[in-house]
Each structure stands twice: as C-alpha cells, then as structure tokens.
Image (cartoon, rainbow, N blue to C red; front, side, top):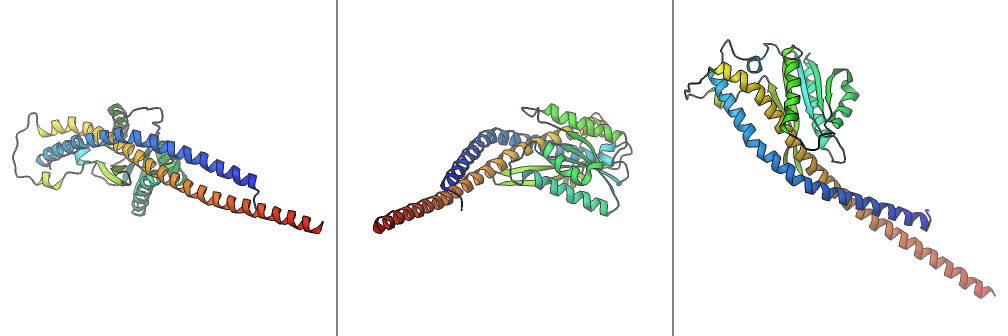
Length: 290
C-alpha cells in the first residue's frame, strides 16, 4: 500500500492536471466561437459556387471542349486522397475519425485494383497514415506555422493538387475533412473535387441560359477557383471541429480528474484514519502493559 506522502503527491499531481485541462478547455472555448463563425460564413459561398458551376456544367454536359477538371481524364485508375487533419492532438477522436474514413476508402479502392496516393494536410493525419501508407504519401503540408487560416493557404494547396493533376499523376481526387455540426458532433466527410461531381438537379435543369463567354471558357476559369474555395471551406470546418472536439475532450478530462481526486482523497482519509487508530491502539496497549 502506498504511503500517505505518496498519496498526497498523487492527489496534488491530479489537481495540477485538472487545472491544465480546465485551462485548455477555456482556451478552446474562446477560440471555438471565432472558428465556428468563420466556418459558417464560408458555407453559403462554397455552396453557391458549387451550385453555379453545376448549373453551367449541366449546360455544357457532353461538350467536347469541357475542361478536364469537369470531364475527367477518362480513366478511374489513380486516386489522390487529400486528407486534412489537425496539427495538434488532445482533441478526442477528431483526427482519428478523419484518418479512419480515408483509410477505409483507400483499402476499398485498392481491393478494386486501383492505385491510391495521399496528400496529407496536417501533422496528425500524416503521422497516422504513414504507418500503413508511407510509400503512397506523395506530399505533406504542415500548417503549424500558420496563426490564422486564410484563403491563400487553400490556394497554395489547390495549386499543388492542380499541378499534379495536369502532370497526369492521378485521375480522381477526394477531399477528406470533418464538418462542424456542434461541440459534441463533428462529421467526417469525403467530397470528390476532381472531376467535379455535377448535382443532378442542375444537370437536369430545363431552364435555358445564355452565357458570355461560352460555358467552357467560364468553367476553365471557375473550376480552379472552386477547387480552392472547397479546400478553404474544409480547412475552416476542420478548424472549428478541432476546437469543438478539444473543448469536449478537455471537459471530459476535467470531470474525470475531479472524480479521481474524490476517490484518491477518500482512500487517503481512510488510510490516515486507520493509521491514527493503529497508533492509538499501540499507545493504549503500551500504557496497559506498564
């Protein structure tokens, strides 16, 4: 059995840990509000961009001059999985849930005889994926030095992906991230961004529009922009999801630490009481012997 001194040290250590987790919870809560606002503000623009492009793409369907970002390469052999995760941990299952979704997709594709490549954005996803797919990771981007996410960060990623696509390194690109719903709910999401998936409603629209310049030329300009917009949205959703998951995880850790302190204090008091009782018995026994 541990001594009373060891128990006091253990209780003090647990209390120190509880203070740290409580502080991290408060920091995550303060950053969550701004991150959530940014993510929610980006959704309407990204959704409208997709809707506009889908409408134009529906009008240009079947055109021989359609951009490859829309029409694809005509093959479905090489898949690039763009996996966006966080740079830090202590956020529950936030990072692992995204990685799990990407891993399951990769294994399903390889079972079909497809070639899979990974583009990792974020240290945590890279650390997990390289254990199984080290030779298939073609690029890793670390955003730890970025204090505040901006559209320029998404543009940089989009340019790297486009360069690989134009070089014929892959046929299909799928984006993986976590969509923020609430503090306790973050949804791992897979979104195909190359070639663009045209919404059925837009493709089947009977409304006729005249475009100037032609649809193909508009798409050639808009599709790379849309790629950056969708990646930027994913980064913002991830950022909000990370702070929500971290806030929830640190709240649970603080509660668990409080429960551990209660149990440790109870054991300490019982042990101390037993020790005092033993000492009293020894004193009484000694006095009676005299």
